Length: 67
View 1 (cartoon, helix red, strand yellow):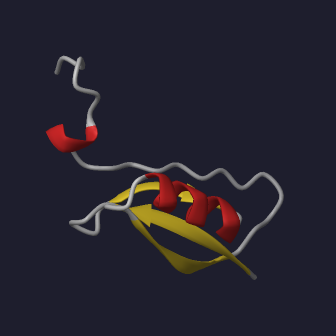
View 2 (view 1 turned 90 degrees about the vertical axis):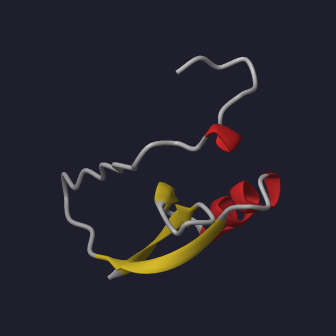
């Protein structure tokens, strides 16, 4: 068993994941509104991880982005 580090926004919505804690820390340092949590993750050959997140808030979008 290993862990996966789920990156979450201030509403605790998952917006990404990292397999290495150092990568999760780097992402959260770049955007201080993000946090991460460690979840148990069973890995087997051919495992695919798909992250599905809810709508992204305007505060997280680039200023020149259009919906």
